[in-house]
Length: 525
Ligand code: GLC
Image (cartoon, rainbow, N blue to C red; front, side, top):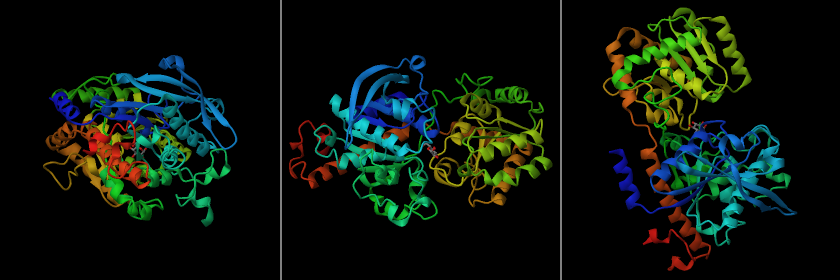
């Protein structure tokens, strides 16, 4: 059924050649949710019949042998004001035969153990941005869409609209930029003086010029791209306000006619308790009682008191303020001391929070445990085992753990923000359709009320709990609908791009076909 729907869409829409540029792509390198989106979205687009090539850096930590990565091109020259930076390009494949092109450079990628966190990150990612464009030109790829992601590739659209605007290959492509997290911009605005703050319109400094460190990559992506999106509809609206705008709300308001929100999906081929190889026992809605076996096995593995009647509450994700951990800070201890539930955590990040949870684990043996590092295996075991997952973010462009948890019948407690608000129906407000618990104000009381309400429903109203659980498991938060929305976004981007070409005199106003080989021109007719 699903398949024929997909086929229908792909038969009627134009087929696009898309280049997707990202600093991290799972499984090659993964730091956060961006890595998952960077393979799952291209895959969903490919399944709709489009051609997608992915470009990323070849970080030192990526193992050629493990992933079957091979040489593709030697001596890709990336020009700068004084000299060319010479890169090699490798190729690897991720599921569904998607091609990933890895830009190799000893100094900027190979010799660095980590993906991010270096003083010259802006230069490293400007190199990725420019290197990707040089790769497209050198191989003469016919590209309709160049899709870049977050501040690290925000330079791409800036280059396209300036340095490369006369390039006959590159100027055929429309640019799309996705904001995964507006808070990260490639510069620390707080340390800059007023005159150093990037307004987004000055010429982009040469990548070897130290002024590149003052460039706000996020802003450049927003200003110069033909179309921009965030990873949920709610976040696209929130960032127009000072509360969520990260200093860019005004400029985003000016750009609102080229800004939309598209929620990220979950890959149910992998993240699905029916097929998941990482969990203890497979199950689905029809044999949901087997979820209990996962809980018991997890309690055993994590030295918790073994009793399926005790509610198991979990948290998965980056340990950072953004995730709303502040709401647990003063509440979790009295709660654990007074209520009979267990708390488990899988995730790593800020040292402060790692220490906080390590101490909590020590102080509540049998009641609290976890794995304080990012681990997909333990995360999946946790989704299968838990009854409740907490995701109380301060802000959340999309968020994924609550959506995965829902497929595993683990009921989410979320804050009403960003993608969380777009994907959960609050049981408190809607008893018939509720598939989770949601609170609005970012304060401890609001969070506590929902936690206690969920624990009470779990303990004393098994029938209702089962209904909430079934609704969350049945919810379709897959990529299917979202990938189709990206195609719509690409069409809009092409439309705006053609207008820009005309404005710049790069194509004659009444005859767009003047740009030779412009492969998307037919969509104008
Ligand atoms: C960022 C956001 C998160 C989103 C992810 C993928 O990590 O914080 O909300 O799910 O990007 O788009």
